[in-house]
Amino acid sequence: MKGVKITKKTLKAYKRSDIIENVKSTIHSRKEGRKIEMCNKKLDYSKVRGRIVEKYKTIGKFAESSGIRAEQFTDAFNGRRSFTSMEIMRICELLEIPDEEIKIYFFAEET
Image 1 (cartoon, rainbow, N blue to C red):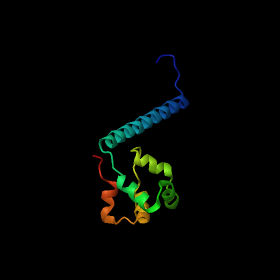
Image 2 (spheres, rainbow, N blue to C red):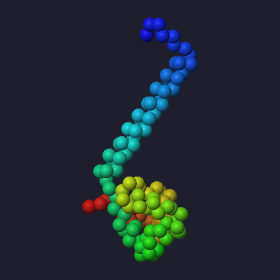
Image 3 (tube, rainbow, N blue to C red):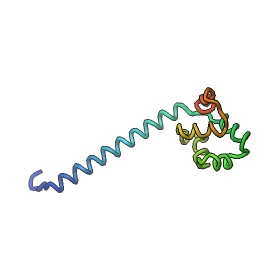
Image 4 (cartoon, one colour):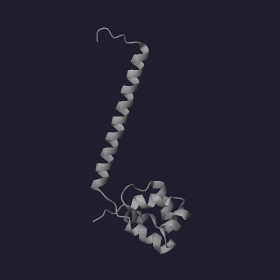
């Protein structure tokens, strides 16, 4: 680039923006990969939902007791998110789900 003066400040700004774009690109790629992976394996939470209704009557009442927002349950039940390990532990504790049945309640694939 003839006639363009590159200063340290310009170079730092360029490097910074380049790094930011690389990070954004990596994050986007990881998110897309995760979405593809999750689309291939949709989980069936109907047993969890049934147990909640059996013991607490509504998702809202259970959400209050568990400290997990009702929207998080809705998102999980609709396949937009998965439960975290901490959420699974809390849910199992409140619903009295034995450890050996966690797979049946939380990791059953939809058919």
